[in-house]
Structures are given as C-alpha cells and as structure tokens.
Image 1 (tube, rainbow, N blue to C red):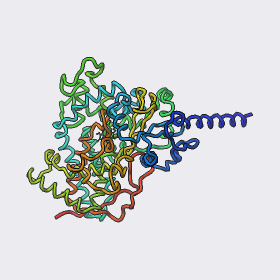
Image 2 (image 1 turned 45 degrees about the vertical axis):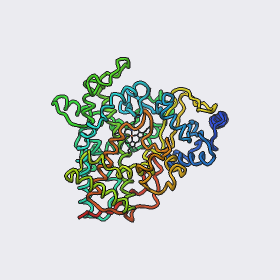
Image 3 (image 1 turned 135 degrees about the vertical axis):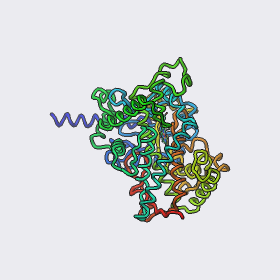
Length: 508
Ligand code: HEM
C-alpha cells in the first residue's frame, strides 16, 4: 500500500512538472527542452553552472534563432527572458509601471534588514527612493569622496609594503577589504580598518552575510517557495547574528551622533537626518498626497538602508576595480595612457587627487565603462510583472507575478552590438564612438526608474582606487593568474576561480 501511494505521488509530481514545463509552449512563446525536475538549469543543487553564464547561453541560443524573447524554467518556476533591446528598454523604462518591482522576498517584522531599497515594492519603494535621492547630490558625493580617498590611500600603502615582501599580490581580496572599509566608513560611520585587520568583526560579519551554509540554503527554499510559511516561522534571509550585529552598529552610531551632536559627511549622516525629519532638506521633495513620504525613518528602516550598501555595493565595486586592474596589467599601452591622463590632470590641482580632478578623468571613465561591459557585476537582473503586459506588436501576454530576467551579459558580449566582444577596448566609449552604442544593449547599472541608485558613488570608489594604484605602481599580470579566466559556479557575480594576481613595481 505504501509503495502504491509513493508511486502515485511520484507520478503526480512528474505530471505536475510535465504540465508546468509546457507553459510557454502553450502560450506560443519559444522555449528550450526543460528536463525533470530542474527545468532548464543543470543541477542547481550542485551548482554546476554560474547563473550569468547560463542566461548568456540561453540568450545566445535565442539570438541564433532570431527570437525576440524566450521562456525558461527553474524547477517548475517560469521566467521570461526578453532578448530584443527595444523590448528590454520598454520593460525597464517606457512601460516601467508594468514592471516596477523585483519580486524579492522581504519581511520587515522578522527580518528588518531585508526591507531595503533593492527589495521593497510599490509605493513604499517609490517614497523611499525619493527620500534618499538628495544623498546623491554632487555636494554630498564630494563630501564622501574624502572618506573614500582615505580608504584608498590606506590600501595603496598596504600594497606598497606587501609588494616589497612578495612578488605577486591577489587583488580581489585587497579590494574586498577596501570596499568593506568604504562601506564601514560611509554607510555605518565606523573606522573599521579591515585593510590592516582582516579579522575585524565588521569584515567577518560581512563575509558571513555573503556565505550560504546548507541550513541557509534550505531556509531560502522555504522562503522562496512558501513565503507566508516563512513569515509564520519567523525565517529571515540573513543569519540572526548578522542581523543583530548590523542593527546594533546602526543603533549605536545614530544614538551617539544624536546625543553628542556629532556630524560627518557620510551616508549615515543622511540616515540620521531622515530618522529625525523624514527628509534631508526640510520641506524638499515632499508631496503631501503620498502617504508616508514625509514620515521619519524608523531605526530598523535606517539600518536596512545602510545594509544595502553592503549587499549591493560590496562585490559589485570590488570586482569592477579588480577587473580594470587585471585588464590594464595585461595591456601596458592602456595602462600608460590612463596614467598619463592622471598625471596631466593632477598638475592642475597641485599634484593632489581631488573630486574635481577625478571627474575630469575621461579615459579612466572609458576603461571602467569597458570593464563593466566585459564583466558586468550583475550579469543578469530581475523584474517582476506588476500589471499584465502584452508584448508590443504580438499577442504574447506576461501575467502579473511573472519573473522577467534581463540578460545584461548576453547583450554586452553580443558581437552584433559590440564587435569582437572578448577584446578589451576602451575606445568603444570614446566621444566619437559611444553615440553608436545601440540603445538598451549597454546596461551594467540597469536602466529606468529602478536603475542602480549609487552608480555615481560606485564610479567614485573605483576611480579613486585605480588612480592611486596608477600613480604609485607600474603593474603587470602575474603567472599565478589562471588564464583563460574561469568563473566560479556559485553565486551570480562573475568571480574568477583562483583570484586575480598582479605583479606590482613601485614607480620612482
Ligand atoms: C560597479 C558597481 C555597481 C554595479 C555594476 C551595480 C549594478 C546594479 C544593477 C544592475 C542594479 C539593478 C538595476 C535595475 O534593476 O535596473 C542595481 C541596483 C541597485 N544598486 Fe547598484 N551597482 C553597483 C554599485 C552599487 C553601490 C556601491 C551601491 C550602494 C552603495 C548600490 C546600490 C544599489 C541599489 C540600492 C539598487 C536598487 C535600486 C532600486 O531598486 O531603487 N549599487 N545596481
């Protein structure tokens, strides 16, 4: 009897998947050949393939068949993958009101850190983004630049000392520490100096937030598949010790600054103002008709916005800076041209790296732009359909709740839009050439109202580090870097197996 029931159960599950895997076909949307039970992914439990690479593979397949879009399956879950840049632009920008959220789980009660700008939805997101927007003004960024430069100087000093002791240095780890210090200083108001103390609690907690144990993975399965049950059980996305550490840091800092009237030119100061007033410039950006726009942030809301610096800013900026160094280490002509530009610009500013000087470094901008093309830190990103949508010029409809994947890596390495895509060529972004880039094909920071909120800050952080490296060192690629680069299969970010090793030589 038990065997019979089990057999029925297996048949029922199989038939369920068979039906689920026919969804796109029934709609007339092209699909691959999903297999039971994983769908279109190669065993996602063993993580045999990087998600970015997989989506690029599907993108390339769809392009080879001249499709404008294709349907995918992850187990029984469906995803829509637009391939045509015009359609992608419509989804991200023109028809944004149909795709205004990401459909990421957050739970303000059990897991307050999960309710940050990246995950929250609807009016709440719109109001919070409007509230935080003044954080973005050139004056505020200029204020933060000095903090960033101090962290970069500390990093270059350490590399200088290390390079005297050993020939080659793995830069991804060093840049991860730099990112941690910038985030610690700018978002949490701490002087954590993980550059000199890699075991600092801030770094360890940050690392823990990015590491997934088997227990974490199982919790995520429940959270994704049964969000209401996860809420009932009080399951959080992050481990309890990580949540209480970051909440504690923000609480202590805000209370300290409020009690002692301490002011600093960092992001935390903006959160202190929002917690006090609900706006950064009294009376500005407020629209009385929008329910909670003028409301002050709670302590937990402030903590979640500081935490997003960690989640969204940590790996993205450090990998971009690492790949820029890697490409310049391989190409001494590009390296020399950027260095010459920096040296010429610095002469105008008494030999000092200033915010205004940094903004003038056009070729360095091109180098980072090309790095972001070849190695977009978010090779694929998401939207969820928030209002039923008919793909223009077709009868295909995307239903409310449907996940949409944006194939950033596929587009940016498509030879039709970027000829010879494997070649690193900053000239693609020169004044003469950048106008030729097809709209919707270059989207490393996303596009539309939900694009990367701190894109300019990320550029400042990367440019400052690169400028200081170029001033201090001549550098070349170490034989310890495994070529061609092979990407880690875990996670979404394109992280090279074995790291990136560079040989640094101090300039006279
Ligand atoms: C090179 C570095 C970075 C890259 C390539 C990058 C890329 C992205 C991308 C692709 C998105 C999704 C855009 C979309 O859905 O249209 C995004 C969103 C976001 N990023 Fe970044 N990011 C970077 C650095 C940062 C940093 C340093 C921070 C914070 C300090 C940050 C904060 C955010 C936030 C808050 C969002 C969500 C915005 C919203 O939903 O309103 N990012 N980023």
